[in-house]
Length: 131
Image (cartoon, rainbow, N blue to C red; front, side, top):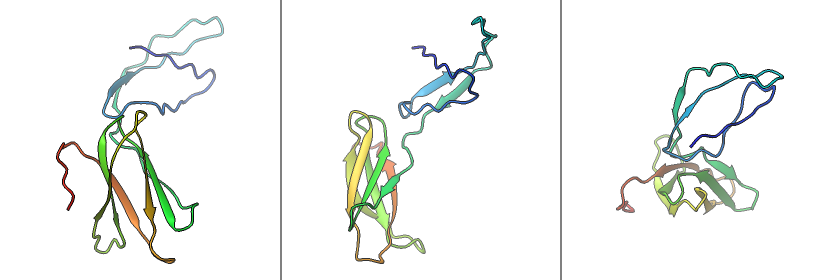
């Protein structure tokens, strides 16, 4: 499939709807006011990440909402630890990306002053077992 993105006079663009673990190739052309295009640039080959960065939201008192993106319907899990020295990662939740690949987990945060660190991973094995 071929798609074009016209950035006008811009010199950059952000593509935020790429499917995880999918290979893409890109090239750039310039055009003048008469719509005459230059020769294409060299191809850039790119594989989209399997998982996005985590977004944390503590706007609801006593909870932490953890959101991220994976491939649609991908199985994944979220872990937490209360300390990083040394970390003691514990399973918080197993999850599956929705049709858009969005995952949202709500954690009941410990008492005020408590601190948690989170990480998430895509589960490439069908039989992920909880500890």
